[in-house]
Image (cartoon, rainbow, N blue to C red; front, top):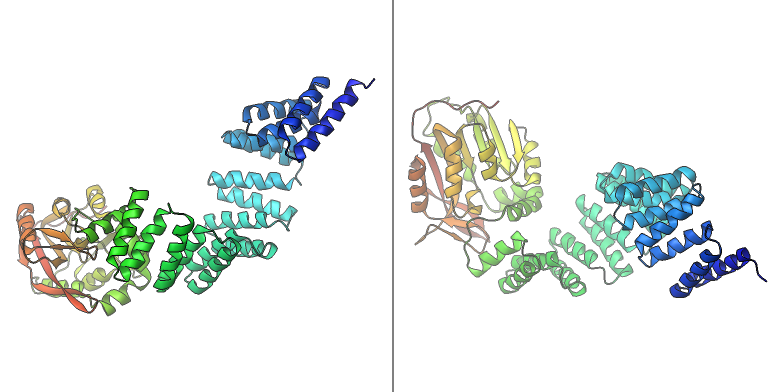
Length: 512
């Protein structure tokens, strides 16, 4: 007659065989029989717990593995498997403790270091993730996943050069590693190496032909490189593989719009908006192409527009579009000031790359700037003209400011606001008595206060500005017509305004 211990081991062997061959029910039955014969068998409890984890029976899996650990607390793999169960149960702190205990018991347990790295990465603890992935890679330098995830952690930490090396190592270990090719492409595009990035995305697509993100990123790189046909094709491929890819529909709208195909652009933007109602950029473009005039362009739209344009902004605006508003406004103001006059505290709203600060530098003792685009502010900072620079929306910035200003500039800014009442209210609150308010806008002829054009920019009527100025306590000192810019070789009529706040001539309060 077979003794219970031998029978338990036989049942355990059969359980493992069933488990390895995916026969879950048979494996569970054998584990149950083995445990009934040997209730305190570590292997039975541990491996049965692993099976229940695979079947997503997390509570039972945790119970079984914890019983196994109670029997033998020194088994590193049991702590590791407990960590995996706790991770799936959302018990973050207990999960980390389990992985760390497994590593303390067996420092060479490479997959414990790897999973610890994943846990830290998911928690945004990139330094700890990098350290864990490096240890896993040190223990097994032939595992492509270890190199890839090290690259991911380094990328999120901002170590682009080291991240590229890690991705390249992953690709060297696994040439068909689609995600590594894709992520390497992202880093290359960020450094302006669009051709190299596109080559990476194409390799990712060859490795994974249904990889929608790689098609989307290929479209982005092609669009930035001015290869609009390639970009449109890539975005359509991304959508073919993921029809609910809202960003791909939006970007397809962008390239159709740039090609002058407004009908296709409108259809793409509408689909993007349907898929993601919170996508403000798509909403704005639907408005401008369908003839709906909103109160203002969304900050998200303006930020995206100028972040993309920051690198070549001045060359394009001043060179190609013949933009002259800052110098024109400066010339108008010079004729109104006493010789040698200097403004004590100026603010440049929508400062962009600092063109207005350059034009008005000789008239200001101190000038600050604010812009919604971080990349534009970075370019402005390079000029060393501003006493302070901030990234943010204009209205919240003015509302939060404790300063008053004697010169307020807003060149090429009002074209992204339709309803200017909130802006005038905010400017009035921060303007010193006698302050000058200078801005340019696109001119609206005919009836109405303002209209959103198909360019995504607003035009305003002269009468609307005059009324707002009067209600806000500003006198209109000058409002000559001008050509604000060229658009596809055609002049865009505009108006340069110089306003002055009524009241006493007391100076502005100095900033703290």
